[in-house]
Image 1 (spheres, rainbow, N blue to C red):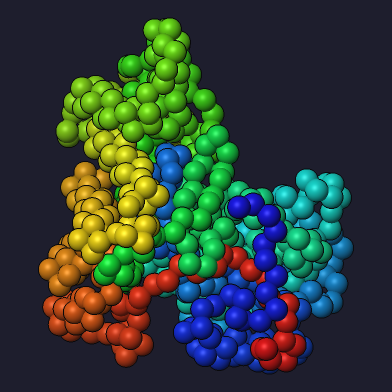
Image 2: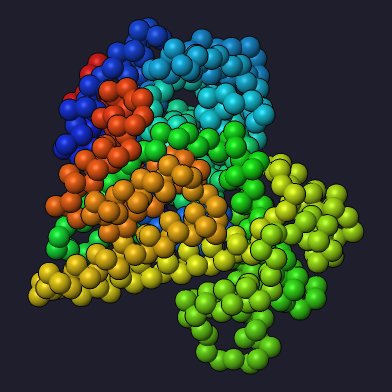
Length: 529
């Protein structure tokens, strides 16, 4: 699925027909406000969407495959490069937001050779700077160290709710990187290059991000989910749901509990990344021959549970002289048993206990290796629970893919009962994910649990959190004839008890259709075609 980011000449190239009226008004407002802010029209608009993850929660940063899809909500950046030249050796960034009362405009004169980002400060323009830094690193590789970036004027508008678990940060960083590439004369921007630089770039704001969010934001195709794998290289391919009776829809329901990865990272998201990495190192130290080093990989801290997985079975087969490999599912089942036998402490492991097993001379050495880049706060690390969740969730992804691609429902002779059974089996996997996120990975919250219970009772086949968790959004696999019932139940039993604005209430539950990924819009000067 690699290739260039598409060029859109009309909004019909980006949005589904049901979204066109709303999006046309929004984009015309963006262009009008850009002209009133900067005195001229933008040259182009960069766009990247948010995503909802169907299955594969919290396993991308352990380099296991996932199944997300892009949504309509997105980040759009109108851009011009018609600025007066700043002082020698620098370029200028002027950036503003449509929501200017909430996000103040900024101006930066930036040296050609570096982009400073203070990740300790929660500042909205840091996400643009992250994309800028990543794009400039790629441009220097292409054009040499003497490359001189162009100055830019930017107006941003985002409809992916911040802290909602739909990847607002990845949408903004990816759209920013794409905008910088286009502003600096890149007539074609490769999807894989954009995705890989966006994955690394977002870590500059202090979040140990995996790669699912950025992959979904860039690679997605209209009407399809996206199967994303990270090893041995980043690959993404579209996956369609087979015809079913009743027809299936995805509902996204907000909890209105904000889950900000930047703010809570040290005790939530970043801590889980560290725990998974420590679990990989611990299992390797105990189960593989002494002195075995895990391969460096693209995970946030450079080693991963997937790296342990591959190393363990490669060594096992070499030592036994095996000529036939187990399936990945069989390997994961074995790893689950080994994890339960090896990581026995339900209460977790102290830094001292982990350092001893890893053969490190002190806790300081452990901290330097695993917690210095993204500090975490924890007395004990729950290695057992995190590894069990990751291996089980990786298995669930494979099971769901098998149902989608090998289901008899794709044949015209499928009976209604057969597809009802398929629907239930798909939904059961989503429910298992939610159970694991709540009980094993401990990334759910009371509000999400309540929403999922309400939706299931009203007719959802499967309901679970989506995104980082600890609030944000939930995704629900709902038969078309039960959509209204689920919406009404959620309104009656959950949303009616909250103080919401009319806008929040209207957007609390939406039917989501798989959308297109990143795009550059070049059409419609002075308006939209």
